[in-house]
Length: 433
Image 1 (cartoon, rainbow, N blue to C red):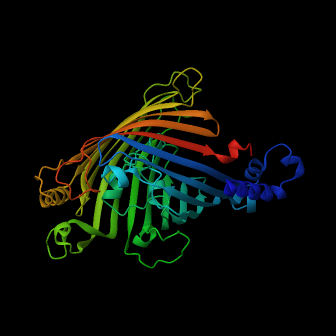
Image 2 (cartoon, rainbow, N blue to C red):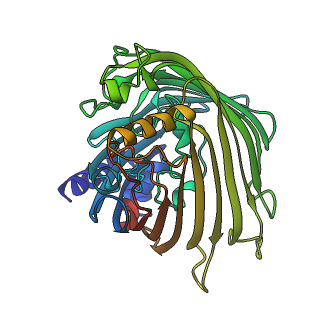
Image 3 (cartoon, helix red, strand yellow):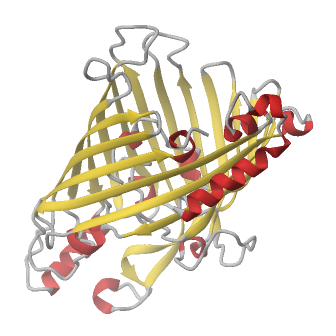
């Protein structure tokens, strides 16, 4: 709380250059935005408890403080189309999958990079009336590619913030672990676009000791190039908007073989270092479609969304991934911003990963009968309590947990039933700033 009060005081102090007449009409944060400085201060928390299944019954809580500032250089310095984006996060807490479930994919998306971290520091330039958008600096691939506003209506990391397949099968960089990057998006018209980027692959950026503030390239071993081509419409343009996007990645960073060690043995059994490779790729098709919208002046309605992903080259952990979801925006009378959603996805493990799982189970005295598909699902209700506060109780179920966290277990981990709770608060809205 002292940190939040200090940041609010700082924001108020920065508002000193706003004229007294303007400041009397708005709070300091709003007044700053009018001058080109948009501040963000929020807190997100996710709790999860397994009621049945997993390794043992436990509860875990993880949270994130997000502090951001965007600078509109047109308003500040007359540089049309230019802007600077910055964000710092502080994450703390525990991951239920690590301490009690035994599977690899978390049921709390907000967990990871548990420290104070420079998440974003970029310069963006829009050119040709917005037809070309270029951004460079320190950031992550997953906030620019393979993202959707539908995904984080859920808490499971299999869907939020991105379909988890891309992180299992590539060096796709993820928030808030920032590395050097650049991306460019070409808008052919208001609906069609092409988008590509290049992101440094550097294992040091994902270490718990890294805070993101370093400018060094030390430890980098390659790069990853994500790309997308697609069509998108908005609620302002059409009654039933949609997105259809084809994308993929070319990964030129190093990675460990999912099965073999450098001598050709099974690394998990021999204890030898895994064989190291360079070069893999994948593709995906994702979509969303609004199905119903009773009032064209409101976003209330039912939408369907989904994604299909597969690898193209390389030695990978998963061979394909399918996801499908439904989201109803506007539920009961007077609850136009509430949501009710369901998502289900199937992670299909590769031959190499399945051989590793089976070898470890046999070594533990069990049978080579590991299931190849981990199926995760969630139903979540998002309630907008006030403009500043949103809560989302959720229920999650995992069929055939992948056993990554308990590799020397002779029998399968029982299917898992988790009750979760997600909480978001916008501090400036809460304080009326």
